Image (cartoon, rainbow, N blue to C red; front, side, top):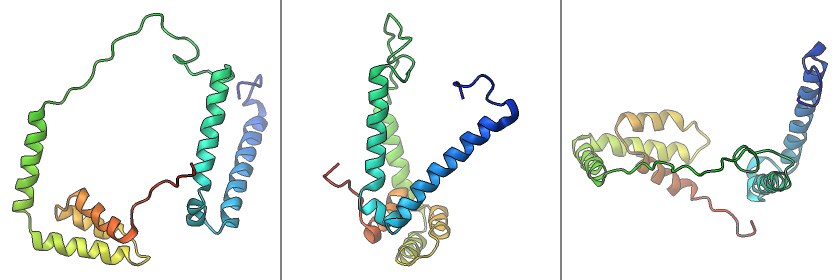
Length: 163
């Protein structure tokens, strides 16, 4: 938009940009569909390669000065400022652990087990996981417990080594 005098004049330019963006998005969707859908595309590493290529292209543009990143390749401050770090007292961690232990002791653990079993049962189908996850949260299941169930069903994603 910065390359035209009046980008909103008659809105043709905004419409052209919108049409261009829509066509490029449709190209991506078509490529993914031709691969057999997003799951197949991820298994082939397509989105990861696209993200890496885009990051590489942007970094090259920044390095050449074609793209401006304020404070990185233009408009840098002469003197560096000390950035204050947040230091969390170890007592906070100990207090949170104590609260978690108390929560696990006081919650209805039979209900917790029931909710986690429900999450697992739905995860093994094509069902909507949100209702059982919400019920699990209401029963005070921890995020770790829910994630452990989901990892047991779906496994854990790791990037392929060719990246």
